[in-house]
Structure formats: structure tokens, C-alpha cells
Image (cartoon, rainbow, N blue to C red; front, side, top):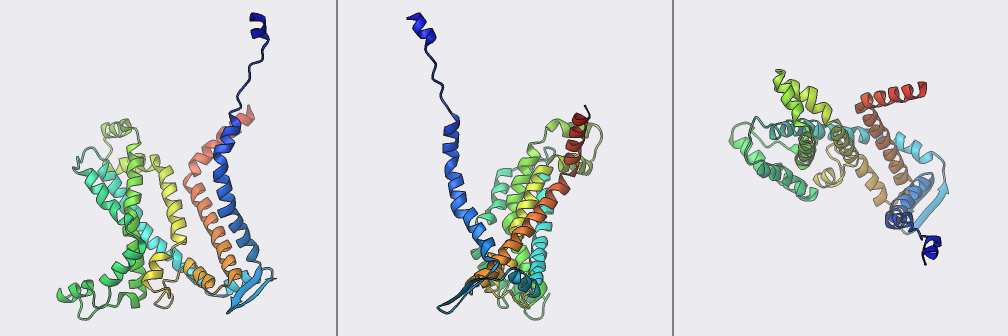
Length: 318
């Protein structure tokens, strides 16, 4: 029996196939719902393909005609609008979020009720953008409570039409985006700061560093990966801005189309069944997002990339 046992082959279990089975649903869903639509969008961007009433024109190959017509239109203006609206909301968002994260995680301040403040600043993120836009539309209308307060306080003599003014309309969109997302950014940055080794702050305090020096020399460099993530996700969300300006201006981007974003322009082409132009807009937006994200990533991680390059050079030299 012992010889038979020794001579018997031990059957090995192949666990690799189970890993492929478990990840297969993701790749199947990605292929069906993302990759195939993306490929078809790129494909139809080179075709004349639209609907007039019940008549469908195309698809007829037109090469780069859709892209040429796009850049000859007001697309660059809408691209500028989108970037302005995103920056107007993101700059105060990142500044205030960094300040709040630094204050809430500073042990020396001993702020009480941190959990309560976390819930309060995150709550606007739970409100739907449509409800937020309707609320601001009612608050800042000509007969709204904001104008009523400003007139009763003697600041204004007559109602200020926020949505009829370029700066007013853009300011409202930026303010809404700031209020909806600064809480989420603050929570992320707080988690990043709390992940820093406390001994670094203790050493800086013993060395006589001021809070400002500690913030810029220790906190900011240590949370750089999260800052890159926040900046990239905010940039993608900003370039895809749609719901707030769409509802606030009823899809018109008024005044003078100063609040018309790229996705609102894309939605107009989809609504008119112009699939060729809509595909061209989608492809250009995809390329712009990719370029911006790659630029931000390599800019903020320049030091790490340089160190990695030096290490590879040393290994190659050996």
C-alpha cells in the first residue's frame, strides 16, 4: 500500500481559471456597455448620419467633414465656457477643502463635534443636481428672497437679474458646483491627512516649524496622490458638466450662450438625431479629457517620475 501511495500522482487544483471566471462578468459588461458603444461612436463620427422627420439620411462616409464643421462652429466658445465654469467652482472648492481638512485633523485645535461637521458639509453632495438647480432658480430669481433681502437692506434699489447677466449666471453655476462637491473633497483630503505618520508633525513642531510651514512642507507633499485623484476626477466631471446649467437655463445656455457647455451642445445634436456630429463631439471631448488628465498626472508626479527614471538608469548602469 505504501508503494502505491508513493507512486500515486497528486492531483493539483488549478486556481487560475477561477480567477478568470470571477473577473469575466466585468469584462463582458465593459465590452457590451462601454467598448462597443465607444467604438461605434468613433466609427459614426466619420459619417453623415442624421434624421429629418421620419427620413434617415446616411450613414454616408464624409471623412473629417464633421470635425471641420465642428471647429468652424461655436464649439471652441462652448469649450471655453466649460473650462471657465469648472475653474470658477473648483478653485474655491480645493482651497476651502484643504483649509477645512487641515483644521479638522489638527490635534492642537481640539475641535469638538467633528463627526457632526463632516455630516453637515457632506449633505449637499446628497442632493440631486436638478433639485439644487431649481432651488437656486427660485432663490435668485427677480422676485426671489435673495433680491428681496438685498433691496430691503438697501444694497440694491431694484432686483438684479442674475440669470440675465453673464457674470451672474456663471457665478450661480460655479457656486452650485462648489456647494455640491466641496464636502466630498474635504472628506477625501481629511482621510489623506489622517494617513500621514503623526511623528512627522511632532518632529516639525519640535523643530519650531510654524503651522503654515508644516502645511506646505509636510501635509501638501504627503497628500499629493489624493490631490492628483481629486484634480483629475474634478476635471473630468467639470468637462462633462451638464445637469446644473441645463436645468438653470432651460437648455439654452443664456445669456448669450455664456453658460452653454460641451455636453449641452452634444445633447442638442443628439436631440436633433445628428449622430455624426454628436459622435465627433464625443471623440474630441474624450481626447481633451485624456490630454488634460495625462498632463495633470505627469505634472504633479514629476518628482516621483524623475526619481524612478534615475533608479532605472542606475540599474541599467550596473
